[in-house]
Image 1 (cartoon, rainbow, N blue to C red):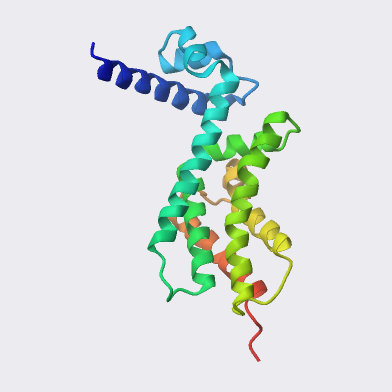
Image 2 (image 1 turned 120 degrees about the horizontal axis):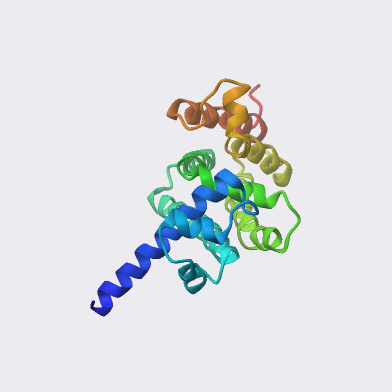
Length: 212
């Protein structure tokens, strides 16, 4: 096997391990999943998990890092497509739309991350420091620029972000509750569009000047 083929095989093995771990973490929780279960699900030798990730914790860290780095890359690509004719509200809602569908399309990792953040651990603190603050910054910059340009009224940005994130995150943190209590399907396009519209109404009511 050539060096290139070996590299491709190793990458495929890593991907199988990550996909298996994401599935099991979502179904059983991080603590309820063993390295052996991941190896069986991924159909790989147990030792390969240690070789590629230095254990279960390493798998989790890579899953989280890949999730956020993918989102930030998509966000940067979205920014290059925007032009000066767009309002700051347009730009803000583009990011909201991107995030709603990103959560939907990566629902297992979304749930996993939000569950891990609910527990006081070193990993949770690292995720908040490395990624959640950056996530917040991406939204905050748009709001602050809109305020500086006079398009938005001056309001406490952190409070707006907290209200917005509560709407955005809950359906993908608790999809079973949304399905069985509210009889809604958070994975559907129609629900995503409804959620985007709901956040739009919230943001417009808070950020835009009242009409006389």
